[in-house]
Image (cartoon, rainbow, N blue to C red; front, side, top):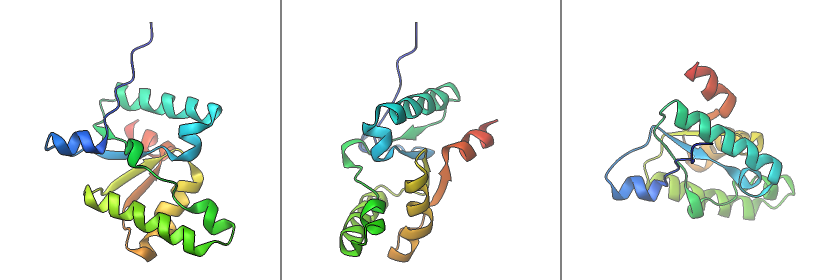
Length: 131
C-alpha cells in the first residue's frame, strides 16, 4: 500500500510560525496535465522519503507568466510575475525547486529583473544534491 503524500502549503507553515526548507513550485503542467502530475507526485514522494521540509503555494500559485511572454504579451507577463513575486516575498521565500523547465527558466532568469531574487533549482538538481 502506497503512503499518502504529505503536502503543506506556505500558508500552513506561516500559520504555525515555521519556515520550510524549500518551496516546490508545481507549475501549470504539474498541476493540471495528467502526465506531468505523475512527475509532481513522484517528486513529492521523494521529498517525503528524504524528510525534506517543503511547501507549495497551493491555490496561491499562479502561472509564472512564461506563456504570456513567449506569445509577446509583456504586459500580462509582468502582471503575473509581479503578483507571484509579491506572494513569494510575502512568505519570505528564498529557495524554489520546480519540475517545470519553463517555470525554472522564468523564475531563475527573468524574475530577478522585476525584483524576484530567489535560489531556483530544477528538481533534478535538488534530487542530485539529496543523493
